[in-house]
Length: 397
Image (cartoon, rainbow, N blue to C red; front, side, top):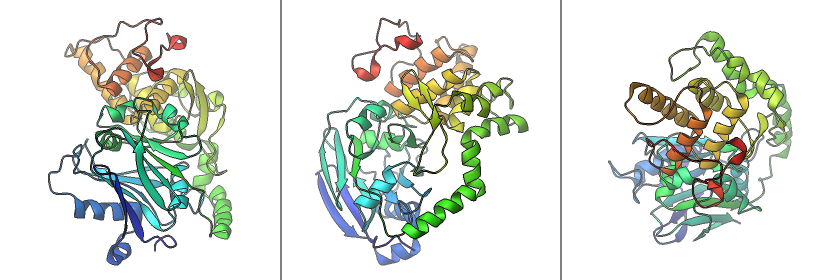
């Protein structure tokens, strides 16, 4: 099964700026369902063995599934590429508004296949069944700022971590609320000097009756009820109860302060619930840098994983990862490893479990590929560097 009329792929060569439309072979459409399968087939056909994931020869696909954009809860797109983190196949998925917009902008296509490397920072603009490559003036901006630069569009972009080619950099959408995370797809975009894919399109129509029935069924199903009650944040309480909550760099399976970062803490801190097409969503909370939606993975890796028991501090760390465009689970595990290394005297940096300020500084250094083993000596009156994303964060100092 394929989505209505989807037979093509838009190929964008960043080395030349050329955009071509090509028909997906019929046998591929029959054999491979949706973004993951079709993306895997394209990589197998396009890439030679041993290709450098951060080289110009790598390809990255922004592909849709058969129902992407057509049904509530099915607003997912796949980023498919060769991972710079593992050196193997990577398929990463993200929700939010981007898939709906891409499906509406490309009603006859499965998505966009990107090859080559630009000689300067660029964006890809998609609208009305076509795509073009253009310059971008927000290189260096974080994911929130990049999204705001295109207020009339859905944006999938990288932040400083992707630009720096951090190997667990993400592709962010909806101002950092959603991420195609883990595996380093953001680093692939950074290596290609592709800051963002900017899409202008309304969600497709044609399955409205099915959409309404699906909406009602989703709300009544176990998944919908779970999302309405707690969502992924509940995983903190569950993992702690059964003794598998990664605590202080996996030194324990239980965190004595799990209640302070679990579901009740999220409910108390929430300003509102995230809204995806009117369906139940996770909690939205405010931080010093704006609003964020803390998922269970962030609370696990950046909370219990780092021995931090203040909900506001944990969500601020998650928001920092979101703005930089960096996977929260990988970032939390990297910081936990660094704390262990500092305890052993293997690295020269003041780090400790429970120290959210030190964790925040290290996360920022990782995102910018700064010297990670020099202890920062910054103060409230000393910004990290020039630029709005590096302004002094006096509210947290």
